[in-house]
Image (cartoon, rainbow, N blue to C red; front, side, top):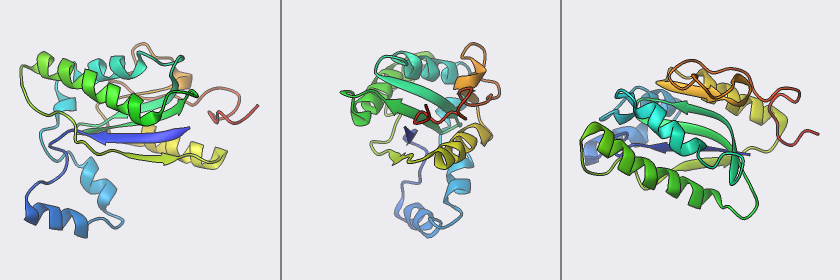
Amino acid sequence: SQLEAFRDAGGLPMSEEERARALWMLSNKVGKFLDSGYGECLLDKPGVARLLSDVVFHDDGTKYFVHAIGIMPNHVHVLVQTVEGYPLKEIVEQWKRISSHRINRAIGRRGTVWREDHYNRIVRDRDEFANQMNYVCGNDMVGSWSAGAGRAGNVGGSAGAGRAGNGGWPGAG
């Protein structure tokens, strides 16, 4: 499994002064700074969280398995396990490409929705998986979902528990 996070284009400072400030804050404060809702916050607009979750869940169970998703006003966290033959980079590019068009159409705007970069980390064991699940489901967010909660009705509400029986860890038998 891997944790994936990507941001809307307005989610990080763009001027030199703002970039320098952000780099300075890349200590313990970076998470709080980025989660504070900087920028346009497109994902906070009515219906956008559901639209994004529909895109993310489209190939769930075939190309990848979504364990949890947390949609913040200006970024999203997805705890996902890819299926062999489907690289995470291509999956994320597809999510971003399709959701960009749908988000822009839904809110009547043009332009860039997502930053080109994204962050991911490999989840190596059960403890790290539990920590990432808690992180994804524990933020103040627009919408969330986790595998144990069942998908319907949870985006825009609160998250539930991980996959039953193994604490969500896909490496468990």
